[in-house]
Amino acid sequence: MKQFFAFLVAGTASLALCPALARAQSFAVPDSASIAAVVNGQVITAQDVADRARLLAVTIGMNPAPQLVQRLAPQVTSQLIDQTLQLQEINRRNVVVQTSDVTAAVSHIEQGNNMPAGALRTRLEAAGIPFSTLVAQLRTELGWQDVLHQALGPGLQPTLGDMNAEKAALKAELGSTQYHVAEIFIPVTDPADDAPAQAFATTVITQLRAGAPFAIVAAQFSQADTALQGGDLGFVQLSQLDPAVAAIVTMMPVGAISNPVRVPGGYDIVQLLASHMIGNQTQTILSLRQAFAPYPSPITNGELGPAQIPVIKTIEQAAQSVHSCGDMTALNARYGSLHPADPGPVNLATVTPASFQNLLANLPPGQVSKPLVEQDGVSIVMVCSSQQQAQSLPSDDDVGQIIIQRRVDLESQQLLDDLRHRSIITQN
Image (cartoon, rainbow, N blue to C red; front, side, top):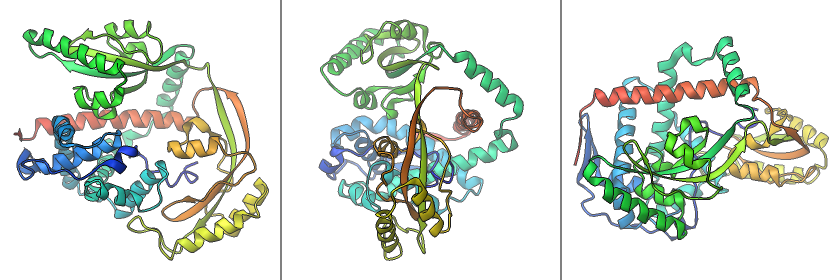
């Protein structure tokens, strides 16, 4: 499976480009040369904040007008402070992020948005967003993952006891209900501010119920850590929610938006996006075959060139004579079987990016896919069969990844908290 999805880069989020990007224009931001923050002597300018705010805006489907950039500025400044701390730690540990890794991450984003190679740079720059803004973010994310793996060392890998305990916990959850929840948090730092905060929350709810997208409103107004992800908490159990929120969620129909809920520190507005009972779903298991053709040299600068285009055209022509999974296996062998023709059973729900999952979901058995352009080669895929199976516990590999990701997330939070406490940070 790792080889089958070799073109996916772990730890990087796909950029949800949308029509707003095509409409976006470059806007001048006042005082762009002023200082927004200083982190251990390293300056974050207002221009840095404005560039990142515009990048954030287009990822969530908003036109990055000056007023929006200004509203996003406090949250984006906080994000840039954390990423500056991360970058300083990356440099302190002499972690080097290879350009090829950044290129692969850009390719991942383009594939996740059905974009040809090189289109991401063109579209961002057309929107007035320097491509270097995205590259800097990706480089920091990739380097930070290396830092976390260094910090955890041998303790990153789960033991047999860890695996058995995780499996037991997952088995105990079978039959319980999970809720997919999004939130908008409005803080109350002074009792005198309670009434205005509640009134503001009511105004926000009025906008939401009039049709304003929850994710966009959350990005603008929520003060929770989830704001820049559109307020999305993912699927959670009731025990993971504040008791007052949990009591409301159990009574909400899917799609409903709550009234303001008083929680410690302020007010929560929540939307129930979905719910499901663990172990009570079916899953689609695919049998696939793939053929992979390598390029003489990999894609550089995100652009296809004379080293790649002929290979893509050749495999397109060869695909016309592929009519069965046996033919696909034979074609893969002609290219040296650099990737296995049979990646093993594939759970459709776990396939990423979403565009590739959608491609497989709609690809009729026995039909060859369109070429899947990767950094070092091009693939075509065929679905041999599709079966519906009752959902079961994750595989050992997946259980191990659950444990590893939890440890990485915890280490990230703890290390970042420590860096904040040991740093000199000023904001304007």
